[in-house]
Length: 497
Image 1 (cartoon, helix red, strand yellow):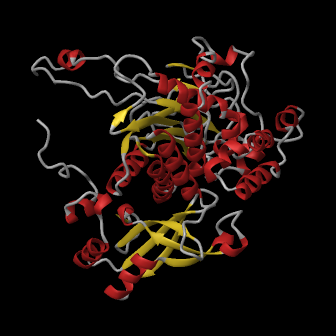
Image 2 (cartoon, helix red, strand yellow):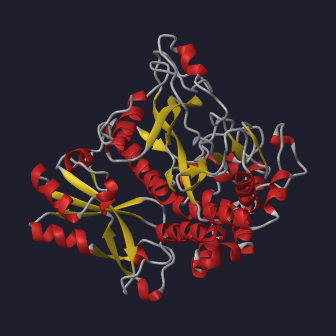
Image 3 (cartoon, helix red, strand yellow):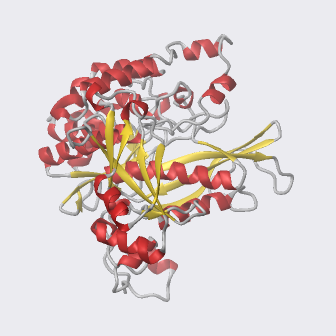
């Protein structure tokens, strides 16, 4: 029997105190919560052009002061936050999005934090802000198809600490390992707890494959996975998750990295994204058995734009040290079922199942009743922790729209389905091997991203030039010829994202 109160188990304290879902929070609600909880501090949060969470701190002076900040936001210097803004938009406003409010889990002074959007001098959403680009991509998809895209991210990362002799780390044996063999489980569980309290839709967390020891330092890989939500919220949650993991690791006195590659021969860290297409609350990717044509068309759109999407999802030279054959990371542009070497994977989705597993595991129970048929997703496996998540998901949403509206996409997808090891399928088109190549592929497909005014042309130019400026055109040859050391690259890009 389901709980009668739909808010009963929601962990966000604001939801519990205010008695309403976060989407319905008002200024009066926030004012009442701050007053009743005696909260003296407010932090405005927003994601800069580098993908990191930024902060503006306020000491609350009065009810009138708080109401003004909640309503008007504050001025910020856009030229210091973004590589590209229009000359007339160097001064910007950040305005709170009340539905995102949460209690700061780390500040010893009770603080309320709220995510913000960027607005230009005329009070319009800043066209070049990554969150606004993503919003426009979602609106364009809905206008063209009546559907909206939902996404869930998988955040992989490494934790580093002094080597332990008790229950030592076993190389490449970390997958779903439990403490004490798995190190720093408390970091993982604390981060998961905080994210849930903050209102993020988290699914689970676990230890990942990557375990190794080098020079007295143990490196252990972990992962947090989310639940599917609107793509804008999914991107915001990923930015929050990186901040939370870093804060928790720092509190334990250890280092964390979301870098795509830490050491040669060791598992890299990705940031896979699962997506599903929703219309009137119904998942359009499955009708109960197998993928729908809509799902295949979306996959076709992803594959057609896969090379240019790396410009947003793989933004540092070490990204392309992860995207190599036989490392459970994709290289060929193709898709398959449950195949972890493909670029787009179709995971198990509880399709065409009744409650037999539940009844077998729990013979004391009666029938569980009808099972939901909304779990099928498709997974894009190329992105990593260097991604600008909002621009990446904006590009993915553009690709989904083109997949659904271009009549050729169904045949295109069907021709790129593989059943074996995709890394051995050399006749397929390959992903770029450098940031410079990714930039060129973006420029070659720029019209798709700029269509319907989703990506501003100046943003595409600036983004491509930034990638080209990294100078990694011959990176793999330089490493092979000892002109560049992998260790130096890892150190340079250790704190990406």
